[in-house]
Image (cartoon, rainbow, N blue to C red; front, side):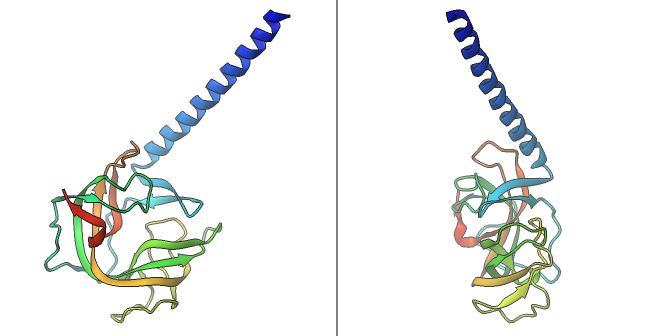
Length: 190
Protein backbone atom coordinates (compact mmCIF):
# COMPACT_ATOMS: atom_id res chain seq x y z
CA UNK A 1 0.00 0.00 0.00
CA UNK A 2 2.85 2.41 0.86
CA UNK A 3 4.45 1.68 -2.54
CA UNK A 4 1.18 2.60 -4.32
CA UNK A 5 0.93 5.88 -2.38
CA UNK A 6 4.60 6.68 -3.14
CA UNK A 7 4.05 5.85 -6.82
CA UNK A 8 0.95 8.06 -6.91
CA UNK A 9 2.87 10.91 -5.24
CA UNK A 10 5.74 10.58 -7.74
CA UNK A 11 3.23 10.63 -10.62
CA UNK A 12 1.69 13.86 -9.31
CA UNK A 13 5.12 15.49 -8.90
CA UNK A 14 6.09 14.42 -12.43
CA UNK A 15 2.83 15.84 -13.84
CA UNK A 16 3.43 19.18 -12.09
CA UNK A 17 7.03 19.30 -13.35
CA UNK A 18 5.95 18.55 -16.91
CA UNK A 19 3.23 21.19 -16.65
CA UNK A 20 5.86 23.75 -15.60
CA UNK A 21 8.03 22.73 -18.55
CA UNK A 22 5.08 23.34 -20.84
CA UNK A 23 4.76 26.84 -19.46
CA UNK A 24 8.46 27.49 -19.95
CA UNK A 25 8.14 26.32 -23.53
CA UNK A 26 5.22 28.70 -24.06
CA UNK A 27 7.26 31.52 -22.54
CA UNK A 28 10.15 30.63 -24.84
CA UNK A 29 7.77 30.77 -27.80
CA UNK A 30 6.55 34.19 -26.64
CA UNK A 31 10.18 35.32 -26.43
CA UNK A 32 10.77 34.01 -29.94
CA UNK A 33 7.67 35.84 -31.15
CA UNK A 34 9.05 39.07 -29.72
CA UNK A 35 11.48 39.28 -32.61
CA UNK A 36 8.44 40.31 -34.67
CA UNK A 37 6.42 41.80 -31.82
CA UNK A 38 6.34 41.58 -28.06
CA UNK A 39 3.40 39.92 -26.32
CA UNK A 40 2.41 41.87 -23.29
CA UNK A 41 -0.36 42.07 -20.75
CA UNK A 42 -1.72 45.62 -21.00
CA UNK A 43 -4.73 46.42 -18.83
CA UNK A 44 -5.51 42.72 -18.49
CA UNK A 45 -5.21 42.03 -22.23
CA UNK A 46 -2.70 39.91 -24.12
CA UNK A 47 -1.50 42.22 -26.88
CA UNK A 48 1.33 42.19 -29.36
CA UNK A 49 3.67 45.13 -29.69
CA UNK A 50 4.80 45.80 -33.26
CA UNK A 51 8.49 46.16 -33.99
CA UNK A 52 7.94 47.95 -37.29
CA UNK A 53 10.22 50.87 -38.10
CA UNK A 54 7.39 52.54 -40.06
CA UNK A 55 6.59 56.05 -38.78
CA UNK A 56 3.33 57.98 -39.17
CA UNK A 57 3.20 60.51 -42.00
CA UNK A 58 3.96 64.09 -41.00
CA UNK A 59 6.03 63.26 -37.92
CA UNK A 60 8.82 65.85 -37.52
CA UNK A 61 12.29 65.01 -36.25
CA UNK A 62 13.15 66.80 -33.00
CA UNK A 63 15.32 69.86 -33.53
CA UNK A 64 17.16 69.63 -30.23
CA UNK A 65 16.38 66.35 -28.42
CA UNK A 66 17.82 65.75 -24.96
CA UNK A 67 18.76 62.23 -26.11
CA UNK A 68 20.47 62.05 -29.52
CA UNK A 69 19.88 59.23 -32.01
CA UNK A 70 22.38 56.46 -31.29
CA UNK A 71 22.85 57.42 -27.64
CA UNK A 72 21.71 55.32 -24.69
CA UNK A 73 19.37 56.12 -21.82
CA UNK A 74 17.66 54.29 -18.98
CA UNK A 75 13.88 53.81 -19.23
CA UNK A 76 12.12 55.09 -16.09
CA UNK A 77 8.56 53.96 -16.88
CA UNK A 78 7.08 50.49 -17.19
CA UNK A 79 4.26 50.65 -19.73
CA UNK A 80 5.32 47.14 -20.71
CA UNK A 81 6.80 44.48 -18.43
CA UNK A 82 10.58 44.72 -18.34
CA UNK A 83 10.87 48.32 -19.53
CA UNK A 84 11.64 50.03 -16.22
CA UNK A 85 15.38 50.06 -15.66
CA UNK A 86 16.21 48.75 -19.14
CA UNK A 87 18.91 50.43 -21.18
CA UNK A 88 17.48 51.91 -24.36
CA UNK A 89 19.24 52.85 -27.56
CA UNK A 90 17.63 55.89 -29.15
CA UNK A 91 16.47 55.09 -32.69
CA UNK A 92 14.53 58.31 -33.36
CA UNK A 93 13.45 61.56 -31.65
CA UNK A 94 10.36 63.56 -32.68
CA UNK A 95 8.58 66.72 -31.49
CA UNK A 96 4.81 66.22 -31.28
CA UNK A 97 1.78 66.06 -29.01
CA UNK A 98 1.55 62.73 -27.24
CA UNK A 99 -1.62 61.25 -25.73
CA UNK A 100 -2.78 58.60 -23.34
CA UNK A 101 -5.94 57.06 -24.76
CA UNK A 102 -8.64 54.58 -23.82
CA UNK A 103 -10.14 52.39 -26.53
CA UNK A 104 -11.79 49.06 -27.30
CA UNK A 105 -9.60 47.11 -29.76
CA UNK A 106 -11.11 46.48 -33.19
CA UNK A 107 -10.19 42.83 -32.62
CA UNK A 108 -12.57 42.69 -29.64
CA UNK A 109 -11.82 42.10 -26.00
CA UNK A 110 -11.61 44.31 -22.97
CA UNK A 111 -11.27 48.08 -23.11
CA UNK A 112 -7.67 49.31 -22.89
CA UNK A 113 -7.43 52.27 -20.54
CA UNK A 114 -4.80 55.01 -20.42
CA UNK A 115 -2.61 53.43 -23.09
CA UNK A 116 0.79 55.14 -23.34
CA UNK A 117 1.36 56.56 -26.01
CA UNK A 118 -0.27 57.69 -29.24
CA UNK A 119 1.14 60.69 -31.11
CA UNK A 120 -0.81 63.42 -32.92
CA UNK A 121 0.16 61.95 -36.30
CA UNK A 122 -1.47 58.61 -35.38
CA UNK A 123 -4.95 60.13 -35.05
CA UNK A 124 -7.24 60.30 -38.06
CA UNK A 125 -7.74 63.84 -39.43
CA UNK A 126 -5.74 65.28 -36.52
CA UNK A 127 -4.34 68.39 -38.14
CA UNK A 128 -1.93 70.51 -36.10
CA UNK A 129 -4.18 71.51 -33.18
CA UNK A 130 -3.90 69.22 -30.11
CA UNK A 131 -7.00 67.40 -28.88
CA UNK A 132 -8.45 68.19 -25.46
CA UNK A 133 -8.98 65.65 -22.70
CA UNK A 134 -12.23 63.76 -23.35
CA UNK A 135 -12.17 64.24 -27.14
CA UNK A 136 -13.37 61.27 -29.19
CA UNK A 137 -10.94 60.28 -31.95
CA UNK A 138 -10.14 57.44 -34.36
CA UNK A 139 -6.71 55.86 -34.01
CA UNK A 140 -4.48 55.09 -36.97
CA UNK A 141 -1.69 53.65 -34.80
CA UNK A 142 -0.66 50.12 -35.50
CA UNK A 143 1.89 49.44 -32.77
CA UNK A 144 -0.65 47.26 -30.91
CA UNK A 145 -3.12 44.79 -32.40
CA UNK A 146 -6.60 46.27 -32.65
CA UNK A 147 -5.56 49.93 -32.43
CA UNK A 148 -5.79 50.87 -36.11
CA UNK A 149 -9.33 52.13 -36.70
CA UNK A 150 -10.37 51.96 -33.04
CA UNK A 151 -12.51 54.71 -31.55
CA UNK A 152 -10.68 56.25 -28.60
CA UNK A 153 -11.07 58.85 -25.87
CA UNK A 154 -8.20 61.22 -25.09
CA UNK A 155 -7.21 60.80 -21.42
CA UNK A 156 -4.29 63.27 -21.43
CA UNK A 157 -2.21 65.34 -23.82
CA UNK A 158 1.35 66.66 -23.62
CA UNK A 159 3.59 68.56 -26.04
CA UNK A 160 7.03 66.91 -25.82
CA UNK A 161 9.77 65.01 -27.57
CA UNK A 162 9.00 61.32 -28.06
CA UNK A 163 11.49 58.61 -28.83
CA UNK A 164 11.58 55.33 -30.68
CA UNK A 165 13.87 52.97 -28.76
CA UNK A 166 15.45 49.53 -28.91
CA UNK A 167 15.91 47.78 -25.56
CA UNK A 168 16.29 44.40 -23.91
CA UNK A 169 13.61 43.86 -21.23
CA UNK A 170 14.84 43.41 -17.66
CA UNK A 171 12.57 40.33 -17.51
CA UNK A 172 14.96 38.44 -19.80
CA UNK A 173 12.72 38.45 -22.86
CA UNK A 174 14.18 38.91 -26.34
CA UNK A 175 15.27 42.42 -27.39
CA UNK A 176 12.52 44.81 -28.50
CA UNK A 177 13.14 46.84 -31.63
CA UNK A 178 11.52 50.17 -32.56
CA UNK A 179 9.33 50.54 -29.47
CA UNK A 180 6.93 53.45 -29.96
CA UNK A 181 6.81 55.69 -27.88
CA UNK A 182 8.81 56.80 -24.84
CA UNK A 183 8.59 60.42 -23.73
CA UNK A 184 11.59 62.52 -22.73
CA UNK A 185 10.47 62.51 -19.07
CA UNK A 186 10.49 58.68 -19.12
CA UNK A 187 14.22 58.56 -19.91
CA UNK A 188 17.28 59.26 -17.82
CA UNK A 189 20.91 59.68 -18.85
CA UNK A 190 22.86 56.48 -18.52
